[in-house]
Amino acid sequence: MDEENWSRWWWVPLAVVVMAAATWGVLGLVEGGCERGPRGGCVAADGYKVRGWVLFLAAMPSYVVLITGLVTDRWPPALGVAVGGVACGLFALTQGRTVPHLTVAGVLLVLAVVAPVLAWRRRGVRAR
Image 1 (cartoon, one colour):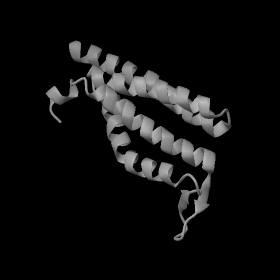
Image 2: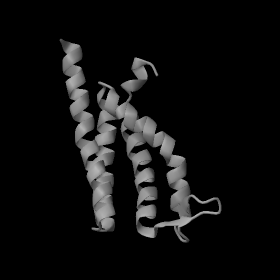
Image 3: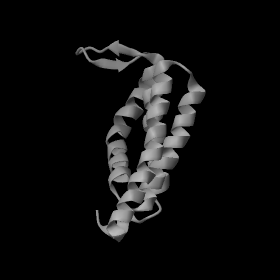
């Protein structure tokens, strides 16, 4: 992507929506557990199949959004990861207080802090 696209403010809602979809899917696996699939792997339990598909479809966009938010010195992708991390972390905490719920929330809240800090540090290095 070129520099102009990294500075677009559409990164903020994009990151929030993608992170929300992935979080909803992960929480489906946390809450419903994992059943052995026909070929041996982990599949979502009955009643959680939609969440499994959402997680499957949101996985690659989540990687793109997270990596972009963590490696850029532009504010929109970093703020998108920060807002998405806080919102999804709080959502995970409202769904339960088990160790997996707390782990998911903790990872999301750490990402919410790390993304803007890294962007701020890169801006400082670039300004010198």
